[in-house]
Amino acid sequence: MTPLEEIMATSRPVIATGCRIWEGRVSADGVPVFGYLFDTPVTRYLTANRYGKRELVPVFSNKCANKLCINPYHLELIDWEPRESLDVA
Image (spheres, rainbow, N blue to C red):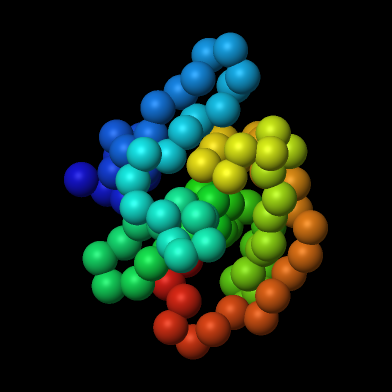
């Protein structure tokens, strides 16, 4: 199973709001994560190559205010952070 297939299988759409709700593991601060060796934020994986800045990591806010929503269209880019050497996304 590819990472994208895993993400789709571990989330469900909510037609009324347009959200896609994560039903898998979350980090200590409630951020949806997946991965086997590293806890990669799901939203970071879904948008990692969208901006073409591989040395930086995007920081997002959910427009819908639902922390478990992973719909890329509900994410608003708010900042960039330097990429850590062990970060896989």
